Every structure is written in C-alpha cells, then in structure tokens.
Image 1 (tube, one colour):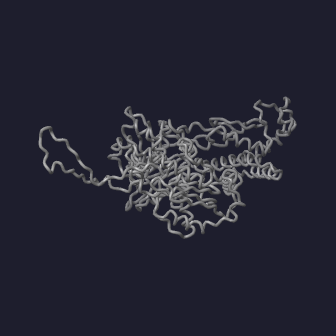
Image 2 (cartoon, one colour; image 1 turned 180 degrees about the vertical axis):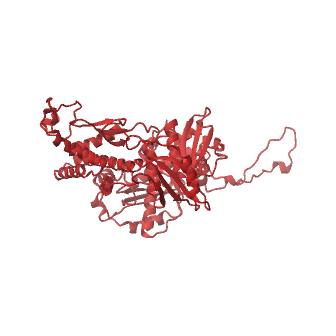
Length: 615
C-alpha cells in the first residue's frame, strides 16, 4: 500500500513581493498555518489492520461452527504477522462444504478447539482495526464464539471491504463485489481458494487497492474511511427537507412525484422518524435512492393504530400500484385450485371464484404453487387429469396415465361414480375440515421413496405436501374470520389506552382508539355507528384481500387482544383441521433449510449496503 506522506503541522507560506520592493526581515520568514480539527485524525498509513477470514460448517453461528481462522496483520502497506489455524468445530462437516473448502473431518480432528484458538486470535488482533470481506458474517461468528465462551468482545473498529468496494468502484468496472471478482480485477498476488489464510491474503491486496482508490476522495484517516463507507447519497442530502413537518404518529406515508403520482407507500408507528431514515446512511437500497430522485413531496395519513395503518397501506398499494413497491401490488393476481362440479370431478387452476358448487383451495400467489399443490393431490388419490367432460354412459379413449395406473380411468367407465367420489371427497375434506387422508398417503409415499433411497423424489413429494398443507391452513384460517358478519376487538395500547377495531366479513370496517382515562365503550359505539357497511360474498375472501384478513388475524391472535363482541357462530378453527399439522410443516421447513446451510438463510447480513458508485 503506498504510504501517504505524513502531514506537517507547519508549512511555509512563501509569498511573492512586487518587483522593486525591499522585503523586510519578517516578510522573509516563513508563515506557519495551524491545522484544522478536520485534519486531525489517525492516518491510514499508521493504522494497523487485521484482515480476517473464517471457514465454517454453515451460514449461521446458531447452528454452525468455525473450521479455520486466517488473519493477516498489516500496517503502512507492510505485513506484520499472520495467524492461521484449523479449528475442530465439534460438528460434522457437510459433504458439499468439504468439497467447497477442501477441509475434511480428518483434517480438523487433531486441530485445537475454538476455546483454545479464540484467546490467541483476540490477542493477535488487540488494538487493531478488523477488516473482512462481508464483515458481518465473520465478525458475527467471532462475537457469538466470544459470548459462548465468556470472553469479552473488544470494541474493534470494523471495515467491510464489500461496503468499501461498493462505494469506490462503479458497476462498469466490476459487475459485483465478490472477493473472487475483486481479486481478478486488482490482480492480487494470492487468489481466493475458500481457505481462510489465502482469502485473508487476497483481501489484504484488495484492501490496499481500495485505499488507493478512496485516496482520490480525500480519505486519509480512519475516521474519514468509516464515514466514507457510511456516506449519504447526494440525493438523500438534497431531499432531506421532504421529511419536515410530518407527524410523530402511526400511519401511512406516500412519496409523490411532481405530478402527484404515488411512487412509494409505506407504514410506520412513527411517520416522521421513519421518513427521516430514508435520508440517512441507514437507507442503502438503490431503488429507494432512485425513488427519492423523482420524489417531490411526502404525504402522511395518520391512523388510530398499527393495524389500521397496515390495512391502509395494503389498500393504497393495490389501488395505485406504486412503481417502487414490490409486494402487495397485484392482489387480484391470485390463483385457486378448483374441484369441478361434475360426475367425475377434476382439479383445475382458475383465477376467479364462481358462485357454483365447485370446491376451492387457495388463494395461491402463483400458478406454479397451485400446480404444485395439485400434484400433491394426484400423488395421494387417482383423480383424473384430463380436461374433457366425461359421460356416465359413453366411454372415451383412455390416456397414458390410466395405462400406468395413475388414474382410475373414469373415461372408460372402469370405476363407478360413487367410488370415484371417495377420491374427490378426500380433497373436499382437506378444504373444509380434516386433511388426514391426503397427508397420511403423502407421508406414506415419502417413506416408500426414502426406503428405496430415491431421496430427490421424496423431497419433491415433500414440497408438494408442504404446498398443499400450507394452503389448507391458510384457507381455514381465513374462512374462520370471513364467515363472521361482525367482530369487535380491543387491544391495550402502550400508553394505557385501548386500540379498537371493527371487523366485518374479514374486512376492517372501522378503527379507533380510546386514550388513557377515556371510557372505551362510548368510543366503540361511535365506531359501530360510522363503520363501513360490508356485505358478504362468495368464497373464503369475499370482502377483502387475503393479506388484509391475515393482518387482522395477526392482531386478533395477540395474547393482549380481547374479543368484545361477535355475531354469528363465533371465531373458531376446526379441532381436526389443517392447523394441527403445524409441527409437520415446521419440520419440513427445517429439513429444507438444513439441506443447504450455506444458502444464506439466517446468516448475518451486511450492515451497510451503499449504492454503487457512479462514473
């Protein structure tokens, strides 16, 4: 690393005198200038960096261990020392991790445990600045180990070379900020190899090249480097005044452009504080910076409490479809799995509910998910998959599924309508009550495939079971609330008052609050008198989107929420319903996440993600 010249506290100020004028003795003496406070700081040339890299058995410190630690101590561009050791994690190393890193269980078996290695590393890094590529990952593992073994974590300053690269390099220079990409771009002496010490050495070269680059931005001290990584985008600084005058209250905020078009809709318990965060270094999403460029004003809609704010946000997003909102923009784009009403019913993926005798399962967010659930039904019961309408008297040609035994062949009249109806009833039971028939058959199928060591096929059937069961749980939860004409709930607020909600057919019809010291009953009576009139409809979501009803269910399921009034049969879920398989769903999710511990699920994320530098 080129060492920047040391700053002198006094510099001569040589001034030219007009020709022919005699210079006095004082004029010939050099003038001295006092350094400003901005110039005082720890220069990078005198800062000791410890560049560290870890190899682990997984992506989260909660369920993974460290297998190797590599660190390089540098100062002024010179290497002062290296620290490298294998570590016995006390856990099995997954095969694909061993293939990726080359570290096997035989290699770490004689290695010291982390309790022996950690104190040595902390002493090696004492008084230095920690540097890592994606520092939250490595530092997160080290902090978790220190807390586990009772070692106090030193207050290391931390520099993340990912964040630094995103600030210093443009997308035209490097397509991404992965260590391998940066090492190839800077032609480092050591290439990353998924081994800790090699990766640390490569990160040292990357760090030095990045420090050269940020020198052109007048970054010469450690404080300036930290501030550079957190630098606020010029657009954020220029538009900071948009947050002035907003209320400190729960509600919805809308960013609008010059023509009044909504650009982004959000919600918060404190509108003013949340909107101000868009103009700080904490907001690092590139899409938000692009949105702020076009934004000209921010509107706030105060709400009685967080539930009303969340519902209003969903309705505004669905109505205006702001370009910078990603979720909830198209609630109408849902799919349903329908069991048709005919002598030999079949499953069909439809976009809308009809007022007929069909049996519907959903809503599904995509057609692909609906088809996955349908495949789970076909794995359990031999429903026909052809689309033609069959006759009870006239036979039709059979398809290939009938020939291989995957269909009961009602087209050839090989099964009586009453016997075929039992297969269709298994789907109806899934929708309306007990899904045990389909679940038990799918679990048996998974067991058969696993016994035959056909694990990939078993995982496919497991995914179909999860999609089917999750849809049944969601449908039964939604129907339990949307079938009630009116339900009134109250929740104790933090200030001692009450948050009130009137729900009709799963739709929030009115929301209000009774402040502390105010009787809630008169407020509730006023809400009921002015609440929106809601008429029931067809299907499990007749009057509101599934997301809105689910937000209301979350509010109702809180232990501090009280049900004040309810009309109809009351709010309940069947005891033999799909929710009794909650543990099964949890195990299936755990099995899918543990199949790839380095997938990043649950792993520490980068604390800062600044927008990429522009040319």
